[in-house]
Image (cartoon, rainbow, N blue to C red):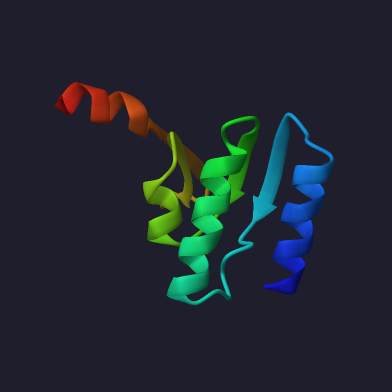
Length: 91
C-alpha cells in the first residue's frame, strides 16, 4: 500500500498523459481497493489509465476492457469491449 501511495503522489505531483499499472491492486483488501478505485477515478479526469487486472471491481469502472486468451490451437486471441457504449445503449 505504501508503494501505491508513493506512485499516486508522484502521479499527482508530475502529471502524465497516461499511466500503465500492472496488477497494482492485487494484494489490496476490499477497503483499500475501494480507496484506490477512487484515486483511479480522480486520475482519469486528467490522464488515461491502462490497468492490467484480474479484479472484477477494477474492471467495473473501466471505459473499455480488453481480454487476451489462448485458443485451442495455442494462438492468443484479443477481445475488446467498450463499456461506455454498452451503458449508453441500455438507457
